[in-house]
Image (cartoon, rainbow, N blue to C red; front, side, top):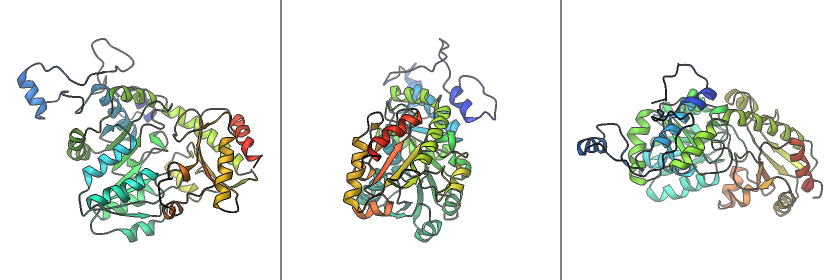
Length: 403
């Protein structure tokens, strides 16, 4: 339970400071870090009841931890869900969701523009266990409708997508899923609950890579799922206990504290990203800029409606080039010319990070898959941090002006 009774109607940025487990007898203001794998039981009978699920109480680290519970409670409150489960990474949260909800013969429908590892996990790994899947255009609702099957159990979208920032209509996909008796899951990693709350728009499950913005400083790996109590406790929790995809207490504590600054970080980083995107549109070497906050973005109006009128902190841009080989060479030149910003495949850090998706996050995909996802060799993704925008621009110009 929360450390004290909170009044209803609090905003997410307030919930990010106040929702947590009950304080200990010491009255700590900053939530405690409980580093333990086991728990001493008051009696054999109590132990039996707790292990049997007849009484609440901690029994073993794979089944629960007070620090992890505080993170789960806080994230659920911010997303507006009944419950949440924390996992060891963002990909493990997707694995937990798929194992908990799907079986051989089921069909999952997902966006072809999702993170590369997600595409491989659904399209290749789960196919070995008899789970059917279809990848469709993120923004084409008609394609989603056409790909629905009688055995479709789950629709899975990432909005905005990594790295092209494509935006889907969450409410429309929720209606499509629910009319067919299926569930809609949304990867909310890029927007976070500071900008977007998919469950308010009809999503059944919200997935997070806590490694990114929830932590906010690139320190630990973490993941989470938010959903109804029936999905989390009835379907996902048993799989988690048996599989061990749990988040460590230390990592949970780091991300728990990261949530306290999520709102101000997202707003400050998004403002810098918007300024950088506008500047990149004016650069002669840049072919196209992908950023939901720009009027030129194909889903700009939808993004502003769903994301609190803020475009987020991820900007991607394509370099002008005559062919794929030249595009790759030019992208590498820009990245190798950096002296301030970081060449790093992570995102969500307060430091600005740049990466070449075609050779990193989407490098293991077949060329046809990369082309379908729109990942060209001249594409560079910028996860904008908190440096001065002028310094970001100057660092990028070291490469752009010497192509």
